[in-house]
View 1 (cartoon, protein in one colour):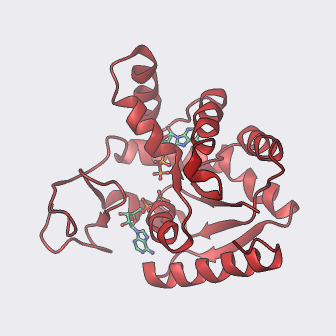
View 2: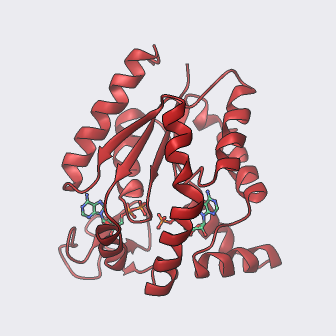
Length: 226
Ligand code: ADP
Ligand code: ADP
C-alpha cells in the first residue's frame, strides 16, 4: 500500500524543512508544489511570466494548473510507493482532486500532519529564511538555524539567497490567503480522521521526533507496512 503524507500548515511553519528530513528516513520523494512552480517560473515563456507574477504577489496559482503539475509528478516512477506532499493541496478543490486521482489507483491519503504555530512565529521564520542556491533542501534561518559562515551553505559551500516572495508584503498576503483558502483543509482532513496536530513551535529536532512518531503510528494502524 502506497503512503501519501500531506503536510499542512501556514507558510513558514517548517513543512519544507521537515519534509527534507523525513523524506530520507521514509524513503519517499519530497514533492513541493512551490518548488515546482519556482522551476517553472524560471523559464522564458508566457506561462512562466504569469506564474512568477502570481508568486511574487503571494497569491495562489490556479487549481487546474496546480493539480496537473502534481499529477504528472506523482506519476513518475520514484513516487510509486507514495510521497510526501509539501504545500499541496492548498484549497478544498485541490484536496478533492488529490483524493480523486489517488483513488484512480486504489490509493488514498495516509495521514495529514498539521503544523500548528502562531502567526507571529510564522512571520518571524519567513523573515529570516535563507536558501542554498545549489540545493533548496538546504534551508537556514538567520536566528533559528544560522549557517556556520554567514551567507554560505554549510553542506556545499554555495551562496545563500532569499526568495523573491520573502518580502513583508508577500508574507502578509500569503498568510491571508492561507487563512481564507487553506485553513478549511484542517476541517476537511479532520472530518476524514486523517489530521494529526504537531506542535511546530519546537526546535527542528523535536518537531521531527513528534512528526515521525505520528506518521509511524498511522502507517502501522493502516497496515501500510512497506
Ligand atoms: P511557503 O513554503 O513559504 O508557503 P511555497 O514554496 O509552498 O511557499 O509556495 C510558494 C508559492 O507557490 C505560493 O505562494 C503560491 O504562489 C505557489 N504555490 C505553491 N503551492 C501551491 C498550490 N498548491 N496551489 C497554488 N499555488 C501554489
Ligand atoms: P514552510 O515550508 O512551512 O514554509 P520552511 O521549512 O521553509 O517552512 O521554514 C521557514 C523558515 O523557518 C526557514 O528559514 C527554516 O530554517 C526555519 N525553521 C524551520 N523549522 C523551524 C523550527 N522548528 N524552529 C525554528 N526555525 C525553523
